[in-house]
Amino acid sequence: MPASSNPLNKVPQVTLAFWVIKIAATTLGETAGDALSMTMDLGYALSTIIFFAFFMATVAAQVASKSFHAFLYWTVIVATTTAGTTLADYADRSLGIGYIGGSLILLAFLIFVLGLWRFSTGSVSINNITSPKIEAFYWATIFSSNTLGTALGDFFADTSGLGYEGGALVFIAALGLIALAYFYTKISHTLLFWAAFILTRPLGATMGDLLTKPLAKGGLNLDRISSSLIIAVFMVIAILLTSRKAGGYPGTRPAG
Image 1 (tube, one colour):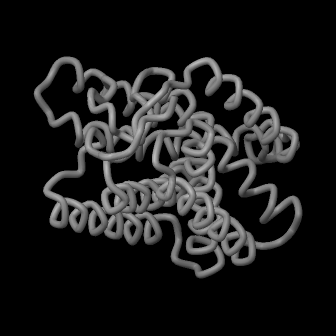
Image 2 (cartoon, rainbow, N blue to C red):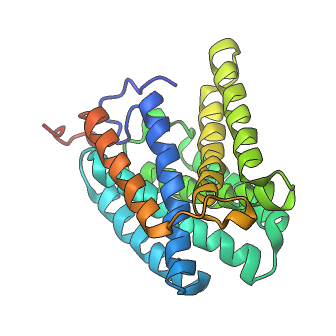
C-alpha cells in the first residue's frame, strides 16, 4: 500500500518494509508476552498490567511528540502486541471465555472503536493522522486489532486443529488475497489496510508460537527470551535501514 502523501502525517510510510517490521513486531509481541507471563511465571493478569502500563507510557509519549520518530512509533506497536497477547490470553484462558468468544468480543470492540473514530472525524484513513485526537483513535484501533489478532491466531492454531504452521499459512494466504484486492480491485484501500493490519497480528502470533512452543505441541521449543531479543535486533536493523523523515502536526516544524 502506498505511502501517505501528507508530509504532516505522524505515521511511517506503508511500504513492504512497513509490513515486514509489523510482522516482526507482532511475533515479538507473542514471544515477549509469553516470556513474561509463562517463562517468568508472572501470570496473564499481572503481565497484562505491566504491559498495559508500558503501552500507556509509550503512547502518551508518541501522541505528545510533535514529529515522527521511527523508534518511538515501533516501540508503541510492540507495546500494543505484548499487552494484546497477555490480555487476550487472560480473557480466553483465565476467564474461560474461549478463543471464539474472545475473538467475537474483541471484534465487536474493534468495530465500535472504528465506528466512533469515523463518527468523530469523518474518516478512518491512515493518511490523515495529523492531530492528537485522531492519533488517539489510531492507537486505540491498533491496540484493539492486535488484541483481536492474538485471539484469532490462537483459535486457528489450537481450536481449529490446523497447528502453528497451518494457521500461519491461512493468514499468509489471506494477506495475499488482500494484496491482490489492493492492486486489482476498487475496494477501499483504507478497508484493505485495516484488514491487513489485523491479519498480520495472528500471523505473528502463530509464528511466535511456532518458534517457542514445545516440540510435543508442534513448536520448535526455542527459548522465549532469546527469541525475543533476536527479533528485537532484527527490528532495530530494519528500522535503521528503512526509517524516513516525516512532519509533525500542522503548525509544527518537521523533524530534521
